[in-house]
Every structure is written in C-alpha cells, then in structure tokens.
Amino acid sequence: MKKIVFLAAISLAEICESTLATDGSTSADDEEKLFNEAVADGLKKDGIDCPFSFRGTFNFTSLFVSQDAKSDQDNPIFALESDVFLKYLKKCDRWNLEIEIDAKVNSGIMKQGSAILRMAYVSAGSEKIGTLKIGFTSTMADSMIVDGGSVLVGYGGAASRNLSLFYKESAGSFVDMGFPFDDNKAAKITLVSPKISGFSFGISFTPDSRNANPFKTLHPKVRNPEINEEKANFPGMRTAYSKNIITGGVAYEFGDLASFNGKVCLCGWHGNGKTSLTGVDVNSVRAYNVGVILGYKDFKVALGYGDNGKSLRSKRYATADIHAFDENVNYTFAAPEVGLKPGADAGNTYSVGVSYAVNGRLTVSTGYFSSVVKFSSSEKSSADVLTLAGEYVLHRSGSVYIEYDRIKSDSCARAQAYSSACGISTTGKNSAHILMIGMRINI
Image 1 (cartoon, rainbow, N blue to C red):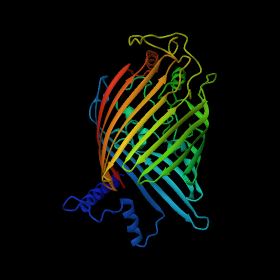
Image 2 (cartoon, rainbow, N blue to C red):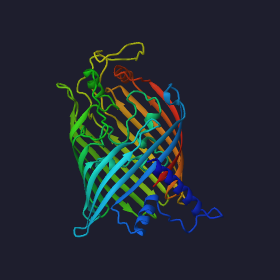
Image 3 (cartoon, rainbow, N blue to C red):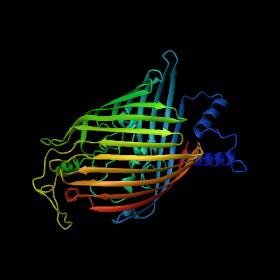
Image 4 (cartoon, rainbow, N blue to C red):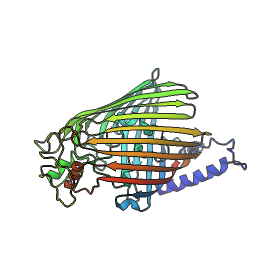
C-alpha cells in the first residue's frame, strides 16, 4: 500500500510537470494515463495478458478545528482516507457479459485508523441488460442518492458522512444524509438497470444487516443489556439492526450537458426493525430521500430532502418530563425521564448545494445542510452546516482543495440525559469552525 501511494504521488508530480507548458498553459499531451492505466499498458507491451486491474483514490487532508465545547479534536488533525479496488474481469462475448470480482480496501479515518476490507462482490452484466451484484457492497439507495452534497467539491461537507467526527457533537443532533442506520457492509443482492430513455433504477435485498463478515462489525456486544437496549435506539448508535431490507432508487436524467440538464432521483429503505433483547420492540425501517440536480453550462444546483420516520426507534416511552439537563445528576436507564416520548422520530435532513466550474479546472461550491431529530413532539435536537469549498484539478491524477465548514448544533435536555445515561459525553449547544486543506490522488 505504501509503495502504491509513493508511486502515485511521483506519477502525479511528473504528470503535472509534463502537462504544463512554459507559459503556464496546458500542453497538448494532457491526456496522460492514470497510474493503473500505465501499468496495464506496460503489461500489454510486454505481452502479458493480465485479467487483474486496480484503481483507487487517496485523500490526504489536514484539518484545523475551533469550537466552543472543549474536545480532543481541537488540535490539528491529519486524515488519510483511501479507496482502492482490485478487480478481476472476464468477458463473455457470446452472452455480451462482463464478469467482475471486486474487492475494495478503505483506510481508517484519522491517523490511528487502519486499513479494512470494505467491499467484496461478484457482478455480471452489460450496458444493455444491466448488472447483477452478489456480495458485500453498497445498497442501491446509497449508491443512487441525490442531495445538496452531490455538487459539492473538496471534502464534501456533511455529505462526506465524516464531518461529525471532527467536533464535539451535541447529543443526537447530527443525522447523516441518506438513511443513517443503513449498513452498507452487509451481504446483499443488487440489480442495476441500464438507462432507458433517461430512466434507470436499482434495487437491493439484504437478509440481515448484521451479516457483515469478514468485516469489522458495527454491532458490538455490550455487557450491560440495559446499555445495549438504549444504545439500540439512540441516534448515531448502531447496535439496533434490521432484517429483510429492501432498498432502491429510481432516477430520471434529461437535457444536454452543454446547456440545460437535470436529474431527479427518489430512494427508499424498507426493513424489519430488530433488537437483541426479547420483549423489546423497535419500529421498522421506513425512510426515503428525494433529490434533484439542475445544471446550466458551468452552473449546478442540487436539492435534497430525507425523512427517516421512526425507523429503529424504541416503542417504549419515558414516563416523566425533563425540563433541564443537570450535569451533576447521574442519569440511568431506570430514571423515569430518560427515554423517548410520543412524537419522537429518527430525523429529517434538508440540503442544498451550488457549484460553478471555471475553465474546466477550478470549481467552487457552497452548501447548506440541516438535520432535525425529535425526542418528543415538542423536544428536538438539530445541526446546521454551512460549507464553502474550492477544488483545483491538476490533472486526471489528482487535485488540491480547501474547505471551510461552519457547524452549529443544539440538543434538548432529554437528548442530553439520554446520552449521559449511555455514558456519552455531551453538550447542549456547540459551535465549530473547521478548515480543511487537502490533496486527492487518483491512481
């Protein structure tokens, strides 16, 4: 892995040097191949017919965080994220099929993270008949989702699904775009259609969200059954699970990329909610997301709305009200005020994004994201994120970017007491500034 990173960095530097003419303009040799393409061509020249290939992206980011609530993340952070695919391809001309075996390795977030196998699946299909995938891969709803983050450059703001890792979050306030409790590492069957008259669809079936071997599980065994029960129904926790999950998406694309164009997409999640405890019920998974992207020449605007309903939320309610959180009180799961009340839900998200491309290399974007989670009909937690970003493409092999995120979060007293009972450090309100400077390398 280190060797690939080193070679990719050298390749990027050489390409950038060779493609810039002495007057600073782009030379005619701007179609240099990516590192994986150069390796494949080299094997062909040597007469080696290799069915294996690879592709991937490395994202190096430096983060600077300033926030009202004290946190371990207040010091500068270096994050490395990688997405590397190893693919075996076999063509079947008689049936016009391509059979692939893909394995994706993704590095951990931040310096203490470690590489972990994220996807492994077999797929067969063609552009004319569609593609069937079997194995550990993303749900179709997550693959097709459209929201405000779809046009953002840089780190991606809230659409990265990692932004909440870098600041001290108010309890239960931050809900990711798309269904936050969807386990993309579970084994599933997925069908992707070809595009017909602008329409395309995808559907996936997951028997059990816990079936994520050989991956690191997101459903740890908790010694205290009460903690297990409450965490199963707390926003952000992943000990609840679902079975017989059906997710899908329908998209329609129209227009001309050189002038006016657009895309509309509807995605949904449907499954049975489960907990590991007998006699305890949670709501079934019922969630959807609708989004649209509109473009005119170099401008793009995207809108998205997601509703998670009451998915995986407990059907057992607290018996007492709570008007103020007291950090000196030792809240327990037996406390009558700890828990949800009627009207609680799993959160809604709203997002909008706008981008503008300059000369095909520089793109600037801005976006706004908001999530709201109800703990009762009158109590809620919320998070708002404003994102400003710019990204400059050096070449096909990579780009550099800078991003600023302004985050404000606010949690109700019930959410704080609930979080405290789970042993999670929480704050009622928090305001954070995050500055990111990064480099993306494509191999």
